[in-house]
Length: 284
Ligand code: NDP
Image 1 (cartoon, protein in one colour):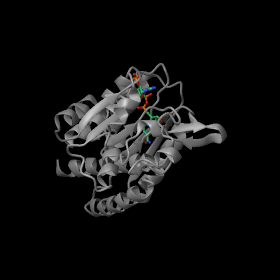
Image 2 (tube, rainbow, N blue to C red):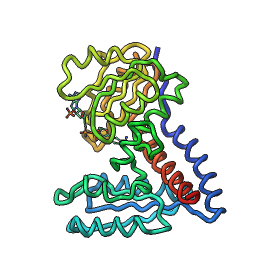
Image 3 (cartoon, rainbow, N blue to C red):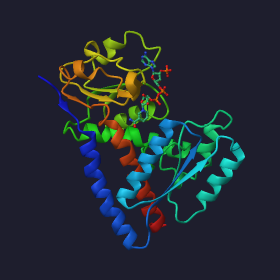
């Protein structure tokens, strides 16, 4: 039997409706949530991500300010800009679109953002709080992944979750969040031997590698929930995931498409964190 397709676009739309109501309420109380997005250089993918984020803010009623800087900006100039935004009362969340030019340290930039405005959830303070299960901004893509799994109606507790990929922005945090949901978690990466033997044990399989179509039917157990985080451009500028969708959907219980799966959830969680930041500021 063919898998149920998880409609990330629809789930994201539903959550964004809830966010819009919350934004309206906060704005009436005198605090309109505000997000600053810093975009450096001309990378087409970054430009389109930033455009999508600004549009999503606008639709939700969130104030957004896109600050575009030339690639020649120095690290200290960028840190200075972040410092100014840290002190700006109208801005509750700050996001620096990655990747950065080679002469700027990603680590220095992430650490310069005040943890209370780190709506990407990348600052070591937020990462640490996430690991110990304390109050923090959850990183947007991993949070979106867990939300999509929950919305299948399946309980994560006690399930074997296998995550393929161990990056700091997706693989590691998604593994941590699944662990907090009481899954038994296996993390696979480029040195993992006999990958298919491990992934076939998964009740929940999250793939975040960045290699088009690397996961096929041979990697998936019947009935598994398969979440494809991968975004890869192939010939004709077409977007595809890391999973061979047509093949895997015949085996899996649930599967996310690319596009229209995890992608829309990432921006939605960014909006959610920005609203959260504004609420915290109001209560401070
Ligand atoms: P990274 O390149 O940072 O990490 C890729 C991970 O995959 C690494 O941990 C790497 O292992 C592992 N890997 C590489 N080859 C293999 C292999 N053959 N077998 C098993 N594991 C392997 O990527 P990101 O985590 O940043 O992103 C992953 C994908 O998700 C990309 O396509 C990206 O575009 C997409 N993405 C999508 C988002 C969305 O909103 N939909 C948001 C963020 C990312 P090792 O650590 O050993 O090198």
